[in-house]
Amino acid sequence: AQKVTQAQTEISVVEKEDVTLDCVYETRDTTYYLFWYKQPPSGELVFLIRRNSFDEQNEISGRYSWNFQKSTSSFNFTITASQVVDSAVYFCALSAQGKANSKLTFGKGITLSVRP
Amino acid sequence: DAGVIQSPRHEVTEMGQEVTLRCKPISGHNSLFWYRQTMMRGLELLIYFNNNVPIDDSGMPEDRFSAKMPNASFSTLKIQPSEPRDSAVYFCASSLLRLEQFFGPGTRLTVL
Image: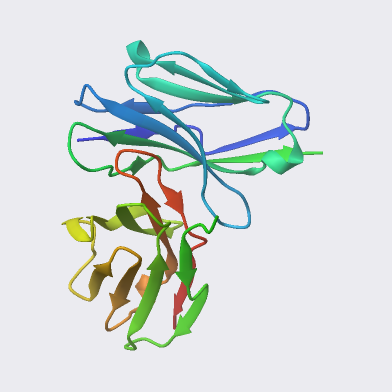
């Protein structure tokens, strides 16, 4: 069975603060993919990043960075110098490969509010 | 490039009526997914197709729900008869096998 836990439910920060969103996953598969999606107030789900289980390199994209640690089964997401436009619900998701499917298991989501 | 297209964007209906939600995946994608999102249950996978074939429908709530994918560019999710507890946002997503899913804008369904 697959499981994604996002223990933080709501986070509120002031603009320009750094914020880290936590994600812990469980899977018995040795090959899997991890994802982060953003859902702004408008409601659409926007893909942010995909990470393979065999690639533990951290990734940075502008103000966004991701820290993947297999030893702790975590895939955390940091926003540096947060902005009001970062306010959204952020979902972490897991897809176990090795089968010919790409079924995603989502966490409950973290609501991030960035205040001016 | 066109993303995933869903219609209608909003649907208000009365209990007992049939509801049909439509989805056009991104051209070239071979997997299609239907999700439901509610405050109580979050994002739930209802069913997904690979190459137009249903692979896993274990998330479909009950027999009132059915989904079809007659060809690579079109899918429907039907609820008959609808009930107030079906009120939710329904998302369609598509992907190229094993890669990230791209979501449509969703259909907000309200059953009175």
